[in-house]
Image 1 (tube, rainbow over the protein chains, first blue to last red):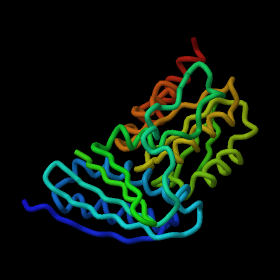
Image 2 (image 1 turned 135 degrees about the vertical axis):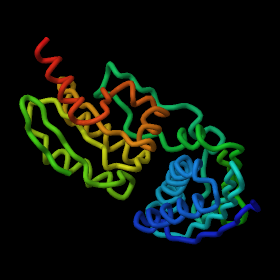
Image 3 (image 1 turned 180 degrees about the vertical axis):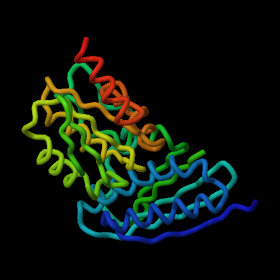
Length: 139
Length: 114
C-alpha cells in the first residue's frame, strides 16, 4: 500500500481540536494503520494542547498537521505560529513522581510531554522564521 | 456525571466519552458538587470514557484529592486508551482498579466485612 499523505489545518480551541482528532483517527484507520490510532490520538492531543496553552497562550491560532500514513508507521509534522517552545530538549524527560502512599501530594500536571516521549519516536523541534515545527514518528 | 450513594460507598458514573482539556474543569466542578460532603469511598466508573488526555488525568487526580487522604477512590471499567495512559503515568499504582462497578462493590463488601 502506498503511503497516504493528508494535511489538516484547524484552530487551537478545544472543540476544533476534538473534531480534528476524530477526523485524524478515521484517516489513520482508513489508511490501514488502525493499530496506531490510539497512540496517535494520545500524542497529538498532548502536542495540540501544548500549542494551545503555551505557544498561543490560550488565544486562538492556527495549527497545521501533515500526516503520512504508511504500513506500521505514522509520520507527523505539526506547525504553529505561536511563541517558541522553550526548553524543548528537556521537556518530558522525567515523569512526575507518583507516590501511592501520598495521595494528597500527587501531581496534577506535567504528564503531557512525558506521554509524548514515551509514545513518539525521532522527535525533532525547529523554530523556522515565525513558526514552530515539530516532527515525530509513531510506530 | 451521575452519583449513586450506596451502602457505605458512592459510585460516580462519567457520562462523557472523553475527559480532555475541554472538559477538565467542568469534570472537577461536577465531581466536587456531587461527592464533596459524603464521607464514603468512591468508585469512579470510566466505562464510557474512550479517551483521557493529561488534562483529564489531572482532573481525575484532582477529584481524588478532593476526597481527602482518608477516603479511597477506585476506578472501574477502563477502556484500552484510558488504561494505557494510567499505566504509562504509573497512576495505576495509585488507584485500585476494577473491571466494572460490580467488581469494585464486591471488593468493598469484602474489605468492610474483614
